Image: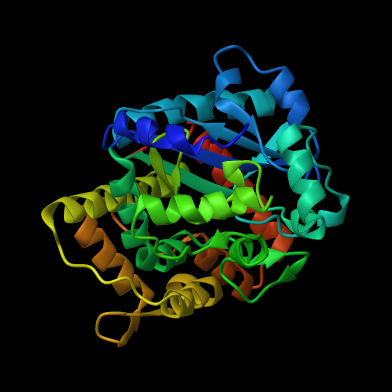
Amino acid sequence: MPIDLDAAEGVFSESVDGTVGLEEEFAILDRDSLSLAPRFEELRDSAEPALAPHITGELIKSEIEIVSGRGDDIADALVRQREARRLLFAHAAASGIELGASGTHPWSDYREQEFIDTEHYRRVSDSLRYVAKRNNTFSLHVHVGVHGLERAIRVCDRLRPALPALLALSASSPFVDGIDSGLHSARTQTFTKSFPRCGVPDAFGSWTAFRDYLQLLIDTESIVEYTQVWWSVRPHLSFGTVEVRIADVQATAAESEALAALISACVLAAARDIDAGVPFQDPAPRLVEENMWRAIRHGMDGTQIDLTSGRVEPARTAIERLIAWSGADIVLPELNGAQRQRRALDSGASMQEIYALLVQETRASYSGSEVRA
């Protein structure tokens, strides 16, 4: 789809603060081995009419994304997503397929995965080659409506220093390529540190500056689609949303929903601060990147740098401060996905045993068979 920069202001002028759309990416697994299985087209083509609009493809045939569509707010989006998940997991079970929810698959060989056959992903694979082939990752994306494009750009700017804390909370991918990576989010290292125009963006300050950047990319044939700008937070020019793309997919629906609620609350808190004229100084990219590395490496077991005081604090403290600022009504888990997997590894469980338990946990949670509190 050609990039229509002229239309973007109109899209955001019609956008409403606080609408929410959710996107969750799951690994498609062979039921017996729990290895990645290239069965996306089968699941898509045989989906019942109620499920089909909620299914989208990602880069590889062993991945499936489920989307809520636009909810009036986070509560409405979650209602929509719960029903879509229920239908997806029932459909997968009837097809003899398991679904996994961690930021990476622990052992499947990326060299054996096949790309889905769409114009967009052919373009991605042709332009990125090894970088695209290497990217077998699974994440949670949250779209939040923001009225006004200038305001959306400034919201993205204000969210930059919050991204590492959100990543630390969401980390769920310690294993990749059949090894313990030593990281809490191998997904972020694999995807965010490899793809171009990815990770924490610069602070642009205005639509004019961001548009100039995009126009340069277009004029130099660096991109032909806006979605080739893969920043971890970006204004989505087609949807009129701020899209936050920093998080690993979550092992359980409860964790995914709490994380989505926090992310949507952070977007709205940034918009409120802009409207109220709350002072804000964009931190240097190198400082945000320092916290990003801490989140990738140690997740919630590690520390973050308070960029206001320059002091080091537990990652959990940084996350709690983010919750307090946003006003999100959530409770932090005692341990996140990466921590639980690492504790199990330390207790002597094998990678295969850990992933098998995770798949069971995911099935019970996302399918709706697990009773919610």
